Image 1 (cartoon, one colour):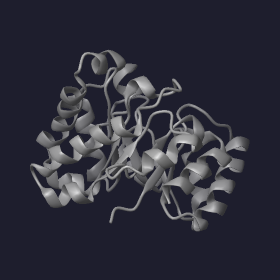
Image 2: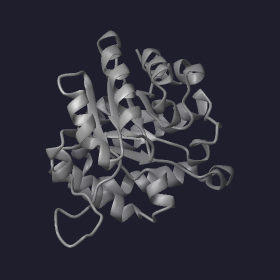
Image 3: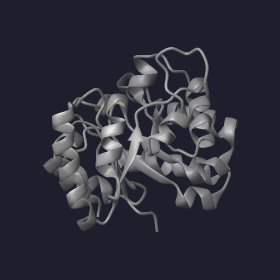
Length: 249
């Protein structure tokens, strides 16, 4: 049975003082929760988070990674550097990276491969825009984004990865895919992997991300193919994040 995972994406938020209080609350509550937890702070706070999470049940993740191992790439951070700071997870292909910073499917696939080579577990983000959904292109977009990964690294690599479905139109907007809408896409993602390897597909954890709140988490997580959440704004408020984790349990 797939164990639920709840990962908090802090995006470009946080201060040393705020982080300290948030991490203390999360690590204190983690032993009482029946799900796996992870937090993904901005790069400058990885050392602080690594220290705060040491010996706890909360895993550390990063929000992005370079596709390059090393070299003259000013401002970039390699997967091996993230591993040295104790990261277990890294977000790959978040919609903000794709949309704002122009990361193509090819670049996302290269980042996925680089993360796995360094021993990190990629959390691969897939999702369609509002116009794509309204045009009936959701399945086409998700299939294309996932195929870029499968074509580059093969289906076996998905056994050491997590997928997050995050409809772009529901991120930070207050709009949320209904449990039925989310389940439909999650099932389609699992089915695409199952065509290549049913065993890998059955074990693959697929998270939902897109305005998850304490009020809707239980209904979302109750769907058969939704294995937890990638949480944005609510991950910055300890009480909200922990209520969502409780719903995952």
